Length: 604
Image 1: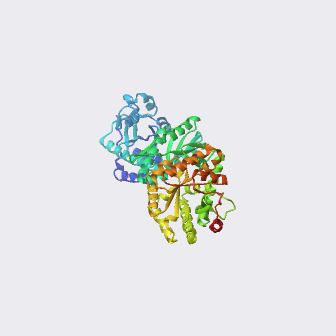
Image 2: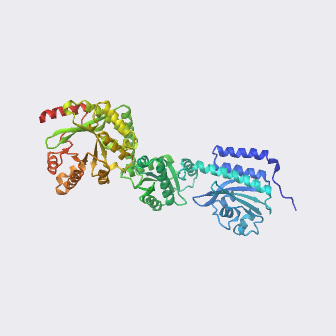
Image 3: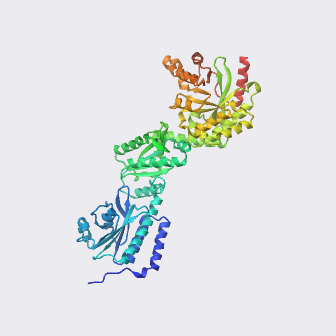
């Protein structure tokens, strides 16, 4: 009977240590997982002659064992067992993974675990197989280390010690790979995994078309600022769980950046679009954070991508544009990419570049539109409206203000406009000292704890009493319920500043807001004013807003007044104040001052 080969003791301990350092070096420099695991398999074969090694990696998504690293085993063997599902009688590797314990098959020809694979084993000259599960730090299955021999044998104590050493090295390599490829907060894949996937798809001539969805949480920055980073992280984890739950084994879920996620699926007609629709619906169920329900919706862009014909950067740019289009429609929906929306997004990017340049060159200035006592026509103050100057085109605030908010530019614009407004008000003569300047403030500005103190300091620099400044908050962007923004408004009120609720009636939070914040007045949205001449139905909303303001002890001002008839109807309803083109258009400071002088002389 021939003598069985023994472990190569010449490799222990010096050669063993040297090989171990080489392998750990691969792991440390984040070498591809196949390279690290192949090095481990080959090292084990050098250590135990006549043994053939395999390292399989457990894939959570498919719940299967995938090809990791091999030594002398032929590629046909590797391909044959790639994708094996762990089970109670799935050879030595499949069973070891299923049991999470070592499986020793001294003779695969008689071992019942190998009944389904006996012919396969004979074809490759395998007579004995030892398999050890590779477990993570939390005891989770991460892979299986397999050892195959051409004769019947069981491991010695020395063999088992070496096996445990190889398994430990493989565990380190797999854990490091998972750490490198997955987002620590959510457990989803990260950008590095995405890059690897894209590279593998581009290299595969037979790859099938894919669908890419970019999911962007709506208003997450506001929620994060309101609730704090710790609660924000909890929301991100819950969002990731909902995305993962809706994904199938053939999908890839990636946390791309902050509050953005990517879901990549095979392009299989309407089935994948149905999954995207279900993902959107899943977000409509309230999130629970710090024992409070949080309404957190998601917008998604979708594009079909064929890696054989289009590079990923192009496809991703397209899906970004589709996602922006979904947000433009109010969020909580998905949109497929199309060329029309591409042009719209390109236009937004162009405007964002213009706004940034205007900020740098101090070419965003206030234009002042008077607010009027309707019955007498007497000006009671001005609203400061941001305008871009020095351009060959006109870009209205309705276009560039939302873009400034999306690009985190609104605070710079807002503070610049506020300072210029204080300067303008301080230039008025004593007989106009009771006039008020209305300045728009973004909820993102109110999220800053120092905002009330900063605006009070600037007003002090110009000797301007706080009560001559009224901060306008747009109702449609209000999501802050008893959070930092509300606290900022209350602080401003305590300091003596006045508060106004702008675009009243266009959002979902009117009644709630009026109860939360002691506004001095409301501004009835121009969309209501424009319908005053449509009969009783057209004026009903204005009447309702006026009654509500009166019940809360607030002053009402109607925006968008353009005709004498509208002004007369408003006055008949009991609305005392108005603003609009009927009296004056917004104008630069010098022109607004001249208009004021002329108007005051005319009404004396």
